[in-house]
Length: 419
Image (cartoon, rainbow, N blue to C red; front, top):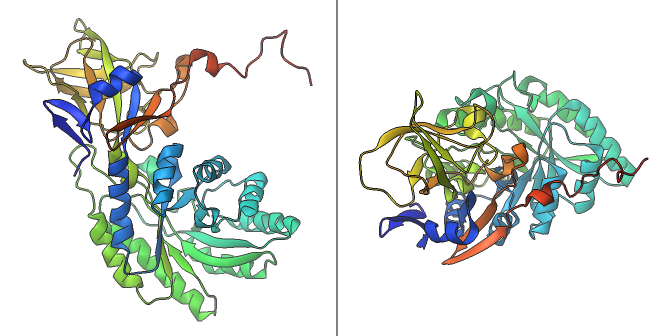
């Protein structure tokens, strides 16, 4: 069930008109549904109910403090990939002992911050990281909990830019070196083994790659247990796909129930790291038509949103549905929906059948994930406001930037301090 539906012909979110959101907060603007976020999280959490589990939301998908607050109130854990994301989780009220720190390039300072906070564990992704983390923990007089992220060399059958589980990808420790890497952890004086994990990619729509990765990880679990190495959890990552056009996503609840049955009574806690699957469909990017250019080889609808607010189409050739907030009568025409940024790649959608006029509002759907978190200030464009709709209330959970705020930390030649 989508939170976005038409009420008296006007696209609304949980009954709140997107026209009213645009009137109050302007465009472009990101709009999220609290109820949709909660419903998506519960599908995973309740699906895993028959097994010891923790659903760790992948913060990189959408890191707004209000979104994190909604999830920590539901008991979510968090999967982070930077010290900045850890700071956001803690600022939103999240528990450090429910935080998993992933990522291939953790710095010493990030390790120190995470150890000081008391996170659940580090997902270590290389042998050099084992050595660095051991040294950092030793300097702090602590023992760092470690889970190895294994690269199982499984094809996620997704876009190559978001594939992470192949041998050619930078992520994780190769499956064939895993046992030796665990021996290095055992030899380290300031590390302790917590678990094992993997993550094979994003926007996964088929169960087969997930099942194959699971079997490869469980094969290692058996080998580790045979050596007397105890694990507390198995982290199977995330990457679950959503509908952008006509995709058929996995039945998340059914997948989780199948996992729960597999792990029930195993003594192992199962962790998942969904991000897009929780917030992707819970948000839209609102934009207004500025001009229609009808005198070119193609028809262009120039809108006030751009690749600065949603880079996925330019970066991945990703498709997002684009719909009028208030449909207009008349014959549709094919438009390329483009933004004002000075790049030919600044295209939100091509060949979209629309009946529109200047001033109309459009909604770019499924923009709750990897939109604001990847936004930029290219062309000195202030990033938009973020609005969370909660039981009929419109909450401005991030104010629109101003042009002045973009250069507030900069100095002219005569005011820049010399060091």
